[in-house]
Length: 190
Image (cartoon, rainbow, N blue to C red; front, side, top):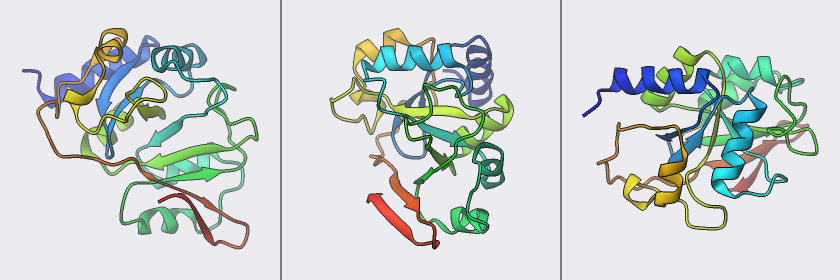
């Protein structure tokens, strides 16, 4: 049994080497890598067998970090993010600093500020954003719990987090929204 601190250290070591991780998020089990490492992101696309046109979600640990990765976020974005009562991914125009294979072809980026203690600690320790995409082969069901994850996913990542593997709490994918020019929130996925 690996403890939480060992999981975080092993994840950071894997991510620093451009590796991929299988980890529990504030929603479902996810595949992750350094969101700023183009080669690592390619590995995620390969593991998921996902079309390159479909962009992935980025996880950050703190709402203030959005200001570093988005060209012109709404002026009150930190308050908006902190007001969310459930995991919510926001699509922003004008992604900054990400490799092309992370950014949508229209220049937008999907970012979720995590509230999960494990993910928050991992991102803070790693000091970079993480890719977070559901741990399934593209087109197959999203695994809410570890036991639902396809063995092909498990054997193809570089590190599998042990934290929450026995947790049977069913998680749901995040809500996805876009904030339009007048500050209204358009819900894309409820």
